[in-house]
Amino acid sequence: MSVSQITTHVLDTASGRPAAGVAVGLYAHDGGGWDLLATGTTDADGRLKNLGPEELRPGTYRLNFGTGSYYEGLGTETFFPEVDLVFTVTGPGEHYHVPLLLSPFGYSTYRGS
Image (tube, rainbow, N blue to C red; front, side):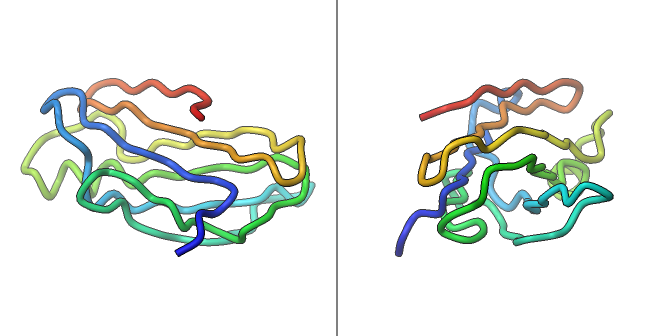
């Protein structure tokens, strides 16, 4: 299986475990709104390696994480029913790894490698 240009890894910092089964959507900004490009779900290790096309044009993109459904499945209350991470793709062929560190009442992210 090939790895797409954009990948993610979701870690549940409250439990100290990967966040398996988180729904993720990849969107591209077209100037007037957002177009859905691809959807996927994190695996048992909290990773999603095959999200979207193998190559994306430079532009603005958004990853939407279904955190509310994830925590509902665990029977845990959460303040954030979803998390949107907006970022810019600048180089054709570059790999963009966008991890999400998640807890029921907070999250953080960074550009990974």
